Length: 278
Ligand SMILES: NC(=O)c1ccc[n+]([C@@H]2O[C@H](COP(=O)([O-])OP(=O)(O)OC[C@H]3O[C@@H](n4cnc5c(N)ncnc54)[C@H](OP(=O)(O)O)[C@@H]3O)[C@@H](O)[C@H]2O)c1
Image (tube, rainbow, N blue to C red; front, side, top):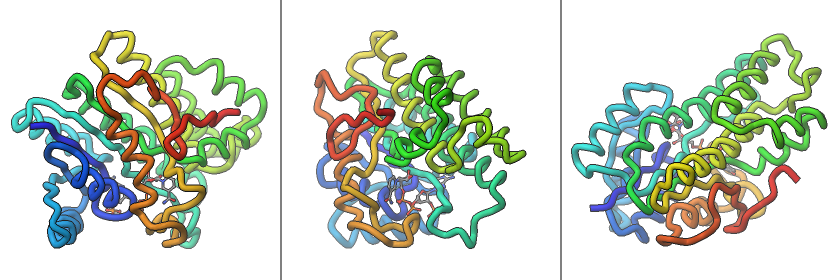
């Protein structure tokens, strides 16, 4: 039996992605959530629509929780076929709850980049031939790239070759943000966009690493929602297009058929490769 996992599936885009996978993916679909009651309530909503996702707890900031999911998948399915790294946080639409800037930079980069990376590192050994990984990034990676100084843009484009390089880049930004030196050091001022630069860079490197290992048709892409703007979720203060529309681009990445030659390791917008650092 094939199996798909969506992180942060209890609401918003993740919920829409789970709904879409339930309709199109030939296998079990796991809606995961950090809060069990919110996750199970979401399952009930989809059950009422005649869909049958399964639930598993997952808090991406809790390494043991990721390991528990890995062990469950290993014992139950002996592998993983689709992973959608959707879970993330942002404060820009609700400044009133945002912590002070240094903390926001640290927290947003921790959850959106470092914990997504941790989820990948724990779950990737389970990926089967033809597995698809969709790392939900954001067009804000493009905006934040544009907001970086020319020399920082050069570093991002030409000096990031490994996951360790991405870790250093994002850590350097967070470190600089602690003393309000980030703009002086050439970083953009937008924590969410900086975290998504990490996700987009990470995805391209992950694809290259699979290719170098000769992994049999495993494909990793990052993506925006790709609908020409925002999707109406709690993250955007419910401003934007409906979640099912926003889910189309991530679903495209997650459901790429076997043995396609591209897109691989790309950032996708509206089902097309998008040159995010142009
Ligand atoms: N909405 C847009 O227009 C837009 C545009 C571009 C990209 N995106 C990206 O799309 C993805 C989904 O965003 P959204 O708009 O649907 O946001 P959302 O409505 O705020 O949903 C975020 C989801 O992530 C979960 N989450 C947060 N921290 C988590 C953790 N530590 N462990 C597990 N789950 C966690 C949340 O769970 P709780 O309910 O427990 O908080 C929720 O299920 C994000 O990666 C976002 O950056 C969104």
